[in-house]
Length: 306
Image 1 (cartoon, rainbow, N blue to C red):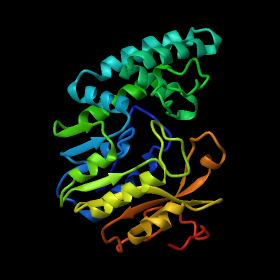
Image 2: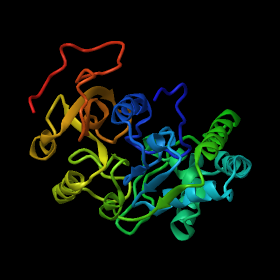
Image 3: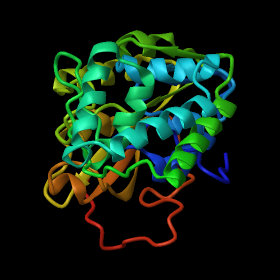
Image 4: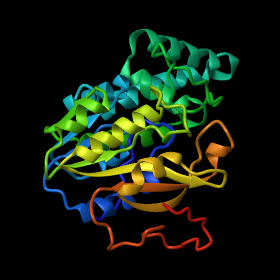
């Protein structure tokens, strides 16, 4: 499943898997699924948009992201609408007081009242450090990136093109859902493939809801019982510590790892190199277990026994 050019989604958030898509798709190719693509944690959608499946169930607990992509699918959000919106809002932002923060707060408050999907796009592109986070009441609570001229023409064009690109790959038979992952995984049948990218235990405050060990255990139980093939993204270890959940739950499955650097995250620890892991319930002996497909391998990389 070779990808010539990665389709990048218009909505941004921390932990996006853009650079890891080719690696993930290499593992999908080994699985060779014949059914649907099922994604219980769709997030901003970069993996799903590059999956190439005609049938898919795409779910996320964040209703705002799902609504945005549903409207792209239906044609109610188009590249032209996005271009006009960002040009107009960008002009207001650039002329706003408090170096743009005044208008950012206005859009943030407007979104927190009406949940306009275009406002979500604006906020995801003007939030601090590309982060997306909501309060327990479901309100946007990431501060401004302090760039009043954020929406220069080239940047608006880039986002507009991204909306155009995803509109071309979203199929009529893609089903966007807004439920808990525990309702989605049981929908998978033999021949389907499930790709899971849940919030990372012990690393991030999730962009919409929390994640604890009970959630990890429930996910493990559901994936262990499924008749479909699955791929789970998680973190394996970094320079300070290892992911306890790998040993506790996932070590009974096949695991491959890759060095990856995250640019997002509020703390220094969360912005260092992290060893990513893909956990699979199918044979992956055909590939190297660490840094598969990378041009440069770090032979000195710390290896933690499973």
